[in-house]
Amino acid sequence: MYRILSLSSFLMVLAIAGSVQLPSEFKTCSRSAGNVNQCLADAIQGGIAILTKGSRSLGVLPIDPLLVTEMHINQGSGPVSIKLNFKDLLIHGVSNAKINSVTFDVNNKLCKLILHASVYSPINLVAQYSIDGKVLVLPISGHGNCNISLANPEAKVELTGKEVTKDGVSYVIFTGLNFDLNPQRVEMHFDNLFNGDKTLGDNMNRFLNENWKEVYSELKSPIEKAFGITILEVTNRIFSKVPAETIFPA
Ligand SMILES: *[C@@H]1O[C@H](CO)[C@@H](O)[C@H](O)[C@H]1NC(C)=O
Picture 1 (cartoon, rainbow, N blue to C red):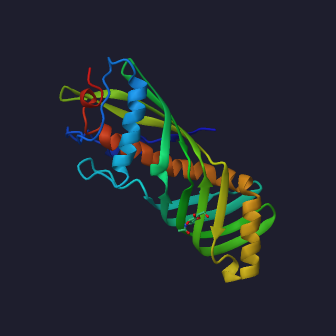
Picture 2: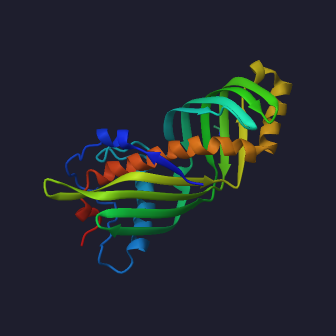
Picture 3: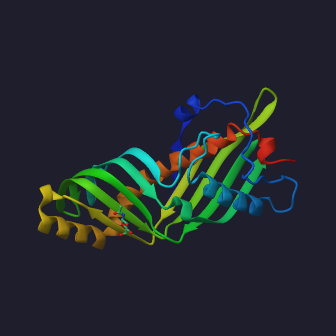
């Protein structure tokens, strides 16, 4: 299931920043060369490694761990109805993503990039949380530290954008994103549930893990959105600074 992010407000603040050099360790892909898709898969794989610790010249913060200052889940109805807030969420493990395939198309200045990736290690979300609500008839409440571990997720990223021209120079800007993240299993641990009542807390953590599919179906969309905004932002930070001709030489 894909979630569409509309980022028009984000784009309003995103001005074409004027061209900078792509740091030389980034691989570029010639449009006319035979295998652009394979080249892009290698380039993106290399890009993830370079951006793990961030890039000052491109204005990109570290992507592993990735800091999400706040994330809010407010699920009013259904089997899992919770208010769950995360603060200072650190997402660990994104740099272990292995790019499986990339498909890139440009048509009438519209471009589409579809990417499939697998992560052969967990992605761990470590944060401070507060929770209140019900999970499958059981009340849940608490606040403290938590750790949500997504085992071996598969991801599909679909970016759509267009070529825009500024001062005669063409750039690619992505405005649309579908992102799908499917772990094989989810392990959760919430410290200090029920005001620190250990028996209740242990039972609830066990219950959440036994019912991880139902719980993750509620967490999935906000987690995908947090990743999705980051993917678009990082991609556009690079593409808004580096002319299309540099990234995709003729
Ligand atoms: C989070 O949980 C995973 C899986 O149980 C574990 O490997 C990791 O060390 C934990 N991280 C923290 C900060 O507790």
